[in-house]
Each structure stands twice: as structure tokens, then as C-alpha cells.
Image (cartoon, rainbow, N blue to C red; front, side):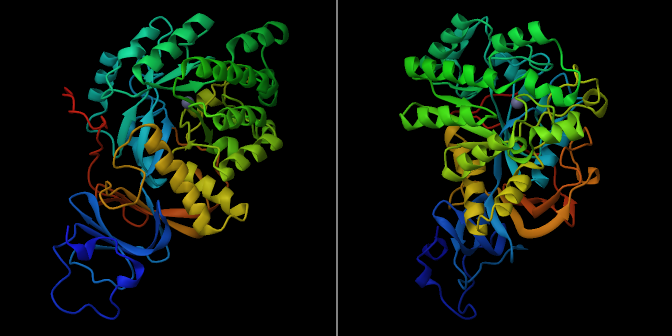
Length: 481
Ligand SMILES: [Zn+2]
């Protein structure tokens, strides 16, 4: 790369109109004049893209090469965001969601990479089922993807020699629900999974609620008879017991462990303390646990009937504190759509889950700005929690950081647009959102994938669904169609 195109010190930029020969070979794309959110800080600049990668980050005033331009004036330029927790429902549940809709929803929400969960039909509990899943998805996704394998309670030993090209992480359900029937009910199975994952270098990602706690409560109190009655029926004690158990197992085996969708203040306290002790234990918070409280479920019904349940205002406050203090490693949407008909079933049988990959970053941006976090600082939080954080945890090379050499996956955010979100905006196949009627602050305006503008707020989608299955740095696998 010519020296003129590397990100030089700020003082090195020439001033005035460019003179002399054109500034190097033509660019594939020039994202011009935005506020760049880089790992080293937030600053004004221009992104030069060549061969699908970030070739240079120029400071204002440096001469530009020839090439198509995308105006980023007044926009934050973020690395394409990563949502490391989605359920795109393929295979077997495509009537709820599919990759065409899910990946378009992602692009509109600034997300260019997702990690998909294994609780499909059939579930992805081994390498062959994940190869089969990759074959079904190939050619249908607009964004890049990697899979969490499902940990199998009957075969926890599979985790010890999982091919890292196929997956580097595995999902453990410690409690079940409608779309999560494969559950670790037995303490010995769970120990074996932690031991095998540690041997295989596999990161466990956990739904950490204790099924025995819930079974006990169900036996004495029966099913909830209102949507508001759901939270007391699936209380924080289930999460606290499970997290305490997981901390003990991580201490014993040293297994890399990421707890998903932490919902209560007590769990956040325990996990932050365990991490401070040096255990390899991290956690995720979802957009919905940051955006809603139990009152919303009581008032508005099944859309925020979720698993883990949405809790109290004090929990929401503690989760925001954990986000702002850097205790949280990733933000996930837990995008898990169901049809309107399914969600509107009676309280005892309405399935937990909502669409969220499109809404996540915008809802969090709104929350950050509502809490008076300055825009540059808010942008850094977003890039850390949906960029560097998940990229580091899940070994997503080239993703999550706006820097020279990275994949040219970018998203542009208008930080101050105030707009009302409606069902009309929803890209997910299910066609509804828990955020309908919300006034958001901030709106994504363009998303670039591999150097191509694949979505723009004015022009819509362009190109084709050419997302790739990310297999780390090893030799790629053959995927049959
Ligand atoms: Zn989930």
C-alpha cells in the first residue's frame, strides 16, 4: 500500500485542493467525510476501500483517489455491527423467520455479521447438522454468519474435538421453553460439558436459568393466568441459582464461558465479581432487557413475554450501569421471531421471543442518548459491544473494527434523527416489533458489505445475498448445495 494512503498522523494532511498526480489507484468505494469510530478513538475522516477491505483511513484534506463516493457528512461511520445472538429459524421453522428476511433486517439495523443459534428443527447438535444447515443457508444471506453449535446433553464429549472451522462455541440450555427442548437437566451432564469444552478450547454460551427452580415453582403454583403473571412465574431466582452454579464450574474447569441475556441486577453483580477475580467469564445483555421493564409486559401483553423474563426498573438500571462501566462484553438481540398468532396465544402458552436484529443498535443508541452519554462516547460503546467485543470472543477475523486491513463492512448512523418506528418499518418475516410506536433517536442510513453499498435508506437494497459462512482462518470447508 502506498504510504500516502496509510492513516498518517493528523498533522501530515496537506491542505487546500489536491495538486499533482491523482492520489493512487482507483478505490472501489470512498466513504467520504464522516466521523470514524475506530479502536483508537473517534475522529473525522474518509474511508478508502479496495478489494473489499479498508485500504486507508484518511484525515480531512488528504487527496482522494478516483472512485465512487458515499457521502458520510454528519454521520458516524461504524464497523459493520455484529449480533452474536440470533435465531434465524433455519432449518425447520422458516415460517417464523428465514435468512432472506433476517439478514435484510440486520442490514437496516447496521448489522453485517450474525452468529446463529442451534435450536432449529432438527437442532444443530453435531458437525454434520451444521454442514447441512450451511448448505441450506448458502446463497440466501445478505450478511456474513457463523454458528454456535448446540451442546448435546447426551453427547457432551463432542465438544472436546469440535472442528474450529465449523464452530468455536456451543450453546447450553440450562432451562427450556417452546423452541428450546434440548436442556441440560442433569448436573453431571453439565459438568461433563464444561470439562469437554475446556479440553476442546470451545467457548460455551449459556442460557443460564435453572430448570429445577422453575419445575419446583410450576408444581406449586401452576401456569400463569396473565401476561404480567409470567415474570413471577420465571423469577430471578432461576437465573441467580444457575449463574452461581456456572461460576463454580468455570472455576473448576477454566472453561471459556459467555452468559447470554443476563436479566437481573444480582446476576450482573455475580458475573462482574467473577470476571474481576480473573475467571474467563463474560456476559451479554440484550436490547430488550435494556429497553423494557416488567410494567411493559403487564400493560402491553405478550410481545415482551420473554425468556429470561423482563424484570424490574432496578434491574434495567443495573444492566445499563454494567454497559457503561464496560462490565458487559457483548450486546445481542436474541432475535427470535414468532408469528403474531403464536404470540397472541393465552398467557400460559405464548412462546417467548421477539424480533430484534433490526432494532438492537438503534434502541441502544436511543438509550445511550436518553442517558445523556455524549455522541462520540456512545458511538465508542456501540463499536465495542457490537464490534470489537463479539469479534474478539468469537474469533471473527477482519470483523468488528474500523481499521486498515479489516473487511470493508461499514454502517452509517445519523446520530440525531428522531423518528417513529412502526410495523411498516419491520423487515423480519413475522412483521411485528415490540418497539412499534417508539420514538428512536438515531437512524442507520447506509450499510456497506465487502465494499459494496448493499442497503441505503433512500434506494433500498442493492446487489445479491452474497453473505459468507465464516470459518475462521483455517482452510475453508466444501459446502454442497
Ligand atoms: Zn436466544
